[in-house]
Length: 156
Image (cartoon, one colour):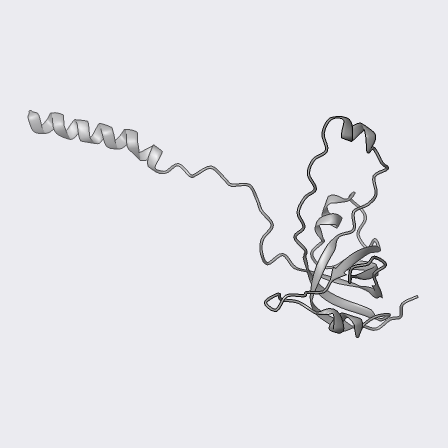
């Protein structure tokens, strides 16, 4: 009798515990993968600001859409836009330096890029929001070039 009660108790405990052992952990929010790269084509021009930057004008993406394109309205495929390309400056940084980008100025190029991580600006609160209301300007996407090659075509 003791063995039957003990066996029944073990079986009951196993039946109650089994479904909880199979539960999946809560999903974590999706983050941008480290391998997030894009292929862009356009005309390479020198940047206008004081820092060393370049602009890829009359540009379009090939294959996977950039985050800015993905967030824009549907039906804008093939839309030409401008991107900012930043050269790498660190010894351990992976990408193209200033000299390699300068060699392609004024040319139509195809470039493999990855997004530049930039810190988000602190949120404005209170009176600062009301006083600094400005028209919304489109945000230029910033990338670091990892590969570059000249393609057929001319820049205007």
